[in-house]
Length: 609
Image (cartoon, rainbow, N blue to C red; front, side, top):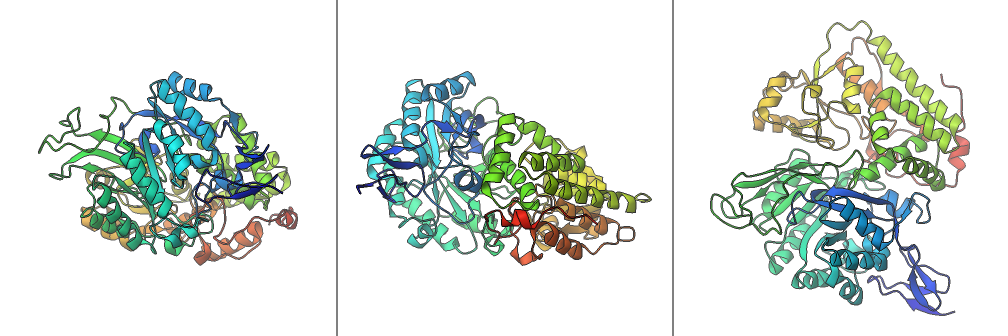
């Protein structure tokens, strides 16, 4: 049996006749290695470049995002798991687009370029190179986000067609790369040097968790040795899939860590930390804020505004230092649709997955069938609107249960949710005072949009959402000023259960900022007992019970932890353990595993009490 070595990435898979490489996207055919699913795309839509994220390359400009499925790495807690591991590359959800069609789509949407992101272009490199070459010939800019585990030959084939790149480091050690299925960090360091020397605009991103801070610091020192002006995007770790929540640093820890890196590199940015000022670009010369950005969902940022005096060649109006930035900010910003652009797309798939897992589904194929129906309908906006309202969310539970062939299990879950909502409404029917509730994500000065489910839950639980009085923009909200928050004067503050903070950290930040709202004075600040209790997953019903009991303990007498135990036993077939939770929407715990369908059979419909 003939064996061939794949030369796309440095994993250098040996592929036998009829076999596949580790990524599952290359196989043997007619004595050579071929791409098995060429020109297949799961996503092809416009984005603003900061969504990718790229911060120093044509700021605020519109690019066409393209994404497929698969990856040459297998990283613990991967944010793209649903598309790199769980979505079938042969799924009907993917659309075939020739390089000519991709380029036409970019031009028709007035994009200045094309960016490959979410999964790695190494999983479909020949198709990507064809698109890149054609795009450049039509005057479009071309770039990607990648782990950069290219072989020297594959990078040489791509390099002439590349304008910008975000290299995602997994750490700065061979051990960190071994955890992802790779042998060493050295190929990435080699390729970083080649790309930078080749004139490609390079930005570097790196996950930061509680166990690798020194590695990230070493990476910063290495970058400084190449050029201290290479932007470093520090991605505060969000523990998803099988990752332990203990690996998640707090926002305060992450901010303090990044502040220290600014003595090494001139441009250090912090992601996954709503409300942080460390997404802004400051002049390295005088410290003036020249570009302001906001949190825009996991791994994303949004351009807010530029300093009025910033020159077309990006010079600081105070000290005339020129920013190391390619292109002036575009005149207008592109606004993505709900769940469109960047990683929020994967959250949409996770929410559907969460519904089905709570119905007892433990087969990937069953979930993929529902994803295909959803993506085929092409109504992400309608789905996003529906899941913001408890009863509309319940309608979606019934819909996807039917689509996935588990309608009875879906009805069982839907009836449970309906009865718990009705229970809360009945308990609070005679409520005399509804406190003003402010819902924040991560830090005090990042509010969640008024129409979101979290605020709907606060109102169903007997509160008045002050978030509704704020501008309904951003994703999932936006920052506000201390003055605005003090003027709202909420009686209660609630911290999001997705990107969260401890009550102590949140309260300390309120004091540091000078927030004097009644909720701070009386320390009525609350965090949910576990992640996933207020958005995305059906576990929002537990968040509703928690909020109702917290706001009106005299009316809603409920043992929230006992309710959580019952919910987990009934819908997941296991006990509830807060220590085993992480921030996944889809999976109910860090140790949840796909099965063979036995759970679907075991959790057949029962009478809801």
